[in-house]
Image 1 (cartoon, rainbow, N blue to C red):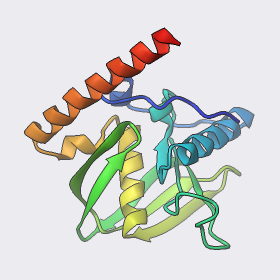
Image 2: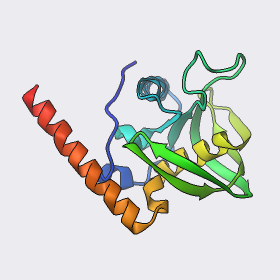
Image 3: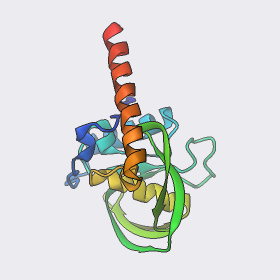
Image 4: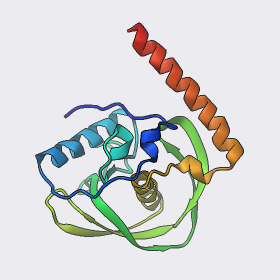
Length: 179
């Protein structure tokens, strides 16, 4: 298990469409652990494999953000090859993203979703979600198609965020070079 670097938008890797996971093996199970560990270390509620540069259709979601805050019996979701089978209603939520640190924007998505996916044991699962969990599932699955929440924002707001992210990336590169 290892905490991975999270790519910062507008990194072109984040715009790539991810491939289906063909086989659930030790490599995929290790990826799940890395995604969860990285998500918790970054204080996130979700993380998609493309955000750490791995273009597999896999996301993790834990709307509680930590093991301490999660109700007993609730487990973080490890979702492989997700497919939305139903979406309904509308919900506007102020979203942020670990690949766009420190930025938020109001995004309107379906308020209730039904999704099928494969779990780490290779079993087909169905989940129904609403509220924050529905938003998180849609947000993370967008990453699998190379889409980020900033694409739902106005061009002006997106361009302002892009300038700040480019500045942040440059600062981090300077820090890495100095280290």
